Length: 261
Length: 334
Image (tube, rainbow over all chains, first blue to last red):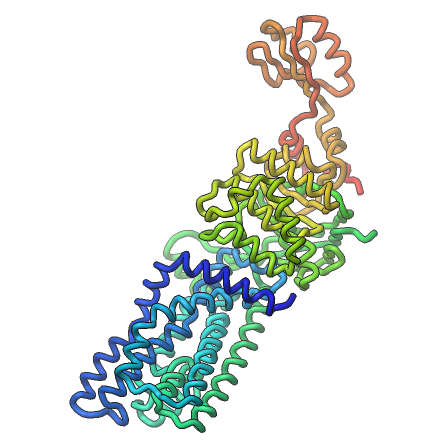
């Protein structure tokens, strides 16, 4: 099977499905507008006095970028995988001569253009009002980091979703991951504002590379050298997540009961 | 020629979590979980030659679906050897997945909110079907199943029968040589069952495909499968010719008569056992050896407008077979 020939069709059909579920997608997007709440709180704080390097303008840029990054790199695979394993409907995917993760990835990626289109007004506001980097290399790193962030998210969701092969349900594990993500990715508070040791821990963990890192790059808080170093770390995490996801999925399929399906 | 399907000493044991109903039992199960082993399939062996149509029969929970899932690579056997089209199913190699299809009447592969045409196109890409072959197969399936107008409607707007026809088309686009069909006619009305049944027969005849079929509708099996494999509680009860099984378990025939006027019950009882008597129509059960004599007597005794001789319904044969002790073989052949 030639993946290059298959993938465009997977994306096209995935896009058709995303269009069919457009109302659900909009509602789903509305549930991820937490950065706008953070934005209003932190800009109010910064109006009194800047917080570290962050004045009101930086906070606006940071959280608008956070909103865009989250929308463009999110993955909901954990819900789908958890349900399909529990209900046995994963069987239909396992009968196809292509790894199910390829099909899931296409379904996930195919919804992104729609999400990006719905994000367009936020992008316009961010470009007009916030201090977005004008550096070509940094912008290139930013776009590469969006893909890196999506890869980490997607494969992490694949790992957690695959736990449903072993546990009764994997969504409680996801809740745990989500809370840690909120705290340590820079989603609620820029990591720079954490005390030194917390920041050290957060920078070593993968969460930052799913959100804080691309945001810091695009609002120009990083120089080229540290952005490149960050990108290397991000793709290392993405590769590790991919390898782990494939192994966990493979081990899970051996235990698959295919009940009901 | 190698067997299309070869199963030797197949056993599948599930470990199932067990608890009583109620809050106390739920709390107890948090700290101490109890499991029980369920032997879904036990020491099962059979082979199927290429091109055969085989009915796979057994009561609910006999292990039919588990076996089909093992044969299609979805479940890993606990022990035993399985080969399908020369492949070991649990490895799920691409060549194996291209050679088979599994149609489950209660589960679907069609994308729910999109027209079946989208699923067909997806399968074209996934199975790497060349455009010309795809167009030819699709055209053939469309005319056999009469789905030309359906494929553009969203799946969710199709009736159950329409959906099943599209499911079959989606499952056969890659021209698999081995078909595992698990209750493909479940829930369908009689005319739709006939359509599906005839389609399976034509596909088998045209492509020389091997078919292993489970169905609760015995008519499906009786009209499609010269051979049946019967399992009960995971164990093989019979493997062989369907007609021979019927003869062994129920060595009698049914004489279905339509008389010109309502017949005399006592006169009929002297010829055989009355299965049904309603107005001018009567169904009698007669030992096979006495059929000729019974027919002559019946025709001579009263004017008849119709007379047919049938095997007992397969449902009754199965019921009688399963009522026998499991140790008592039904003279399994092969």
